[in-house]
Length: 637
Image (cartoon, rainbow, N blue to C red):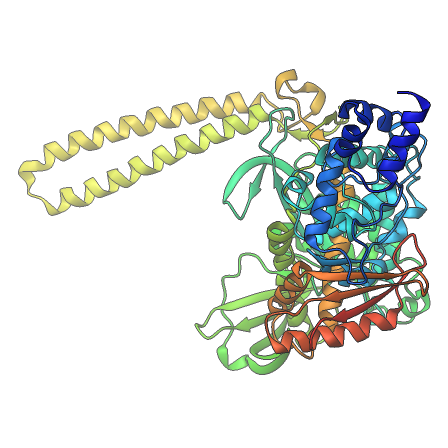
């Protein structure tokens, strides 16, 4: 193309002509226009105006026409061709944020969560991660987009193929969101900085500061992400929800009494909860609370705990509980194992305990007990069917009512796991690359475990034959003497089988004795040697999910007067609000972005949204990366 034709083509493109129309008027091929657009000879308007500018904003049909016209160069919806051309050459450090006046944007309600996301520390990543250079989608954009994705229940990058990518981009002030492949690349670039652990500790420290004077209570529970791949050799873990032992990765989560997550730690092999408490969880908690506790109060009151941990029977050990109190001043609350005695029902008294907005009546009783030489407090709850649920604790300051409350609200953590699995795909593994474990880590010897299983099976066979033998003996006593020979023959056969099985069990035990119970990973066969899935990318995305969950929780708390009884009802309302369409109205003169959300399905919900708008407008939140203040409204008559 000559200089004159390039000039004429630029004039036609600036006037709003499509590439095809421009090529037809100049009598050249459309591929020629595309070639010069890619190489910078021709440029489209960097911030494209709408085809028909209007005070009413663009309609979905208008945006659809623009999205399709851009498909010929960088793909559907990628209308900022000039910026994208610069980014393709590595000359752009991030696309600018520019909001357009748009009508009926899907998932517009996700912007209602933005003030809460910021309040829960979403933007604190800037202290740990370095900006990405020479890319169209920046670090700031990627983190914010991932948050919006998860809140809108877009659970992985592949699901971006099934949404209106241009409209979702308008929520973030950009022409369109990246494709799945591009987003995975940006996530990989971020994960390569290996800062997820530092960021999570920072968030943990900040969230702890919100606890106030109620004391520190940490709920600890394990969670298994089941692995279905073939690249990693992972140890089998018991998955309680499936009642199976399956290969997977273990995590131990620490939550508060409302179920909000603080942090989690990875268990690379098959570590038990007690081991993880000693090695990972307690040291991290102590490190973070050291500036939040008063040493003088601890010295003045020898019964005051540093903090209290609540967990299930997995870590049950009275000796371990005693060591935690005497050495660390850490109290525990847990269920008691192997309870065989029954307390007199007359000892139980009625108490009213407030749980999730309701007052629940409980029959409770407290006694001091000694188990395994350790003195502890035991609290029991008597149910209507006569069952007694036993709780033990080393916390000497809590009243009986609060001990019961803290223990039974442990289900908030179980509810957290269920909600995160269903709504945020907590079990999804985003990175399948493997890394080697420390060769000195000791694991249960697979050969020892295999022989133990064989011994158990043989013992089961012995027990079944003993049962048959007992049955034959009873039948022989009841039958006539004429049939005794027949019974004796059958009993002799069973006795021979039992002797043979016992001999086999003894042989297996001798063989098992030649194998150590635990061996270093280095001694495992190469084809069975344990390794681990690289945790960084999964950890980074899980942190964003944690912030999203806490953002939902804090926003749900602000609508409590309307939905006062059920937590599920509040979250269902928020999900409906997030999915609702709305208008985006930027005002660059007054530096504001007005989000006008469309009506919900009931008058009560609309009234709740109105109150929510007032609360959010009082925060005067600016959209990240701009000075544009967000204004929230509801489009009701």
